[in-house]
Length: 492
Image (tube, rainbow, N blue to C red):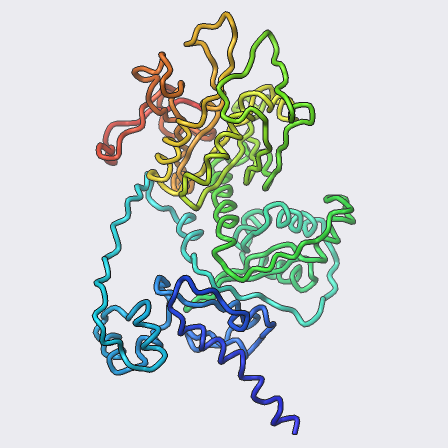
């Protein structure tokens, strides 16, 4: 009696996984029944429909869309016409035609609008893609496998374990290869993998990875509940801070953190021991007296031209402290990593940083360094960077004004301290960035070289041997070919 009652229920998750492949619309949302990971399905119940294999752990299954490069061809080849298209390499039906064919098994006979070919990419890569860049971007899919454990395993805690758990907490997510680079330099990956597995089995870390058709992707680690308890007992986080579990069901939601950490590690390899401090996402808020009114500056200087008079907090993705060549002082870089390439989502961010760099940084702990920090926007390519430069040129308008200062002597800290770099450059060891012109549009001194964007050499080994001078950004249609005129940069 019980076997007849419960046997059909075991096949329900597999049916839902099969049904998820039949919905080709991008606008349709996943129903709760299609979320296999949410239902706690493990082991053989979560079948990978793309490969026919049974991955271990929980699978976060999602609805396939026509834009997916790894969409299964089962729906396209459900009919004889679909099988012919699969053999001949023709495009599978899309949109309403694909849904109609997947439901009744017959191809749609109505005339369909011609599909426009994919436009050529307008992205301009300033440096060839390096191995570390390709490793970070080689799999940007969305299905994930969440690893599970039957029970917690006891583990004697070492001092290195506490530091590893703290790094995972500070940087949100770290892949096993990134942890190997940080804590097992010069040793085999096997040694790192064995210890990280022990930390996972003890509940100090949680882990997941994207599902691939071939092979397996390295595990990605995040803080576990026992790790949060360990950091609290060690006094590394506040005693009242509660543990917030981060359930990952879509790999695209974690790409920002993974790519950001990959970029920082690539810069760290170039800087070597010059990188003295690396903090994760940090909230920087204005002091209480400055929230309602602007504080006075020294020697009768005042602040003008800001888009937002009232200061508002900023939250950089990472904070880097880099030692100067003389090792006496260091410089602070607030990192903003952008994957969206949408300029409109950064207008408010530009204006907040403009006010911060123009005046209220003096009332934070960064005043101990004697100079405002740099804000470095990391863009995907040159096209992305040039769009951000054009938008920042309009929004970074704050200035320091003095009654006896000539207009050409006005200072624009936000324009000088905001930099824009390309992600592939840093992975390739090219330490280049750009900053907007020295004066905003409409300024009488914005003429000649002062009216053009400037190239900047980021801190690190100078391999170009060039002098520190301003250089206009070359226009896209007149890009300098490799082996052409040598570029020169000014130091940050």
